[in-house]
Length: 121
Length: 121
DNA sequence: TGAAACGTTCACATCAATGTGAAGGCAAGC
DNA sequence: GCTTGCCTTCACATTGATGTGAACGTTTCA
Image (tube, rainbow over all chains, first blue to last red; front, side):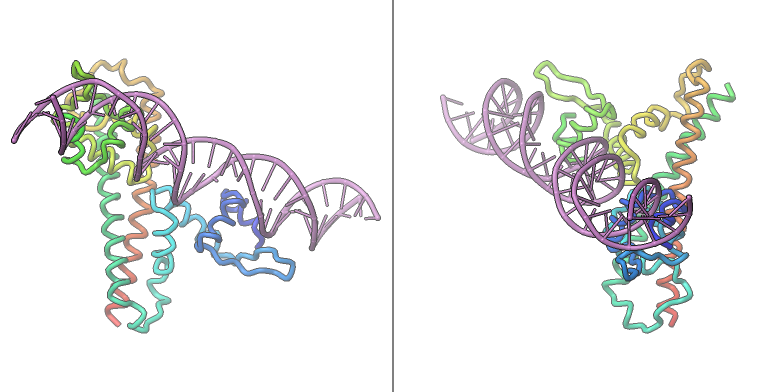
């Protein structure tokens, strides 16, 4: 599909889809006339990118971890693909994500606790 | 304590502590000479603010929900304090936080799954 | 008293994510 | 063929969270 349709399907402005490409998050094919051409799964990928951005990750971090998401099965099973440095980077990023999750969970619970307390009074 | 000590205790630059005050997230007292004076609990509050910012929340949202965090007990139990609009706002914010948690959890799991798959090969 | 360390405000700079518009090429229908 | 809508690139503006530095007052201590 072309960029306009992807934009409609995802609700993400075309400007941003081009920006994500510039940031190496998306890699659409190009038609003869230069038009970008996206495969079906791009819809899901864009939603994933949006979710991560909204969660406070930068495009740089997303670029780094994106190749390893959505691929628990279809993995390049050559062990040399996973250098120790890369493994460390992924673990560190998972840890930082975990910290965010805990922070957000605490505060979500606090909001709920507040609402419950006030309502039961 | 003064701003420098709070900065050392939290690792947050004084510039940012002043910025958070400008954004109505912190409200230190002022000494006669104009120096800011923070109470002990400010340390925890600053850490909380940082956690929320790092999780992708804006200062505007943090300003709105901050008064209701950390107060499951010491609540203004006057029911008129919780207008329906305010309750809606808090619920909506809790929902959006929940979405972030789910997005981050999915991707943390994906990273772990990738690492596990590659290592067991 | 003078230096060092800290505080104040003001202001300009940066960076990432995004908005917006110009100027022009391509495509599909009337 | 012309209009309409989509596509391209280029470029400048904006917003929120920061960095950084100037210019100046305060506290501390030798």
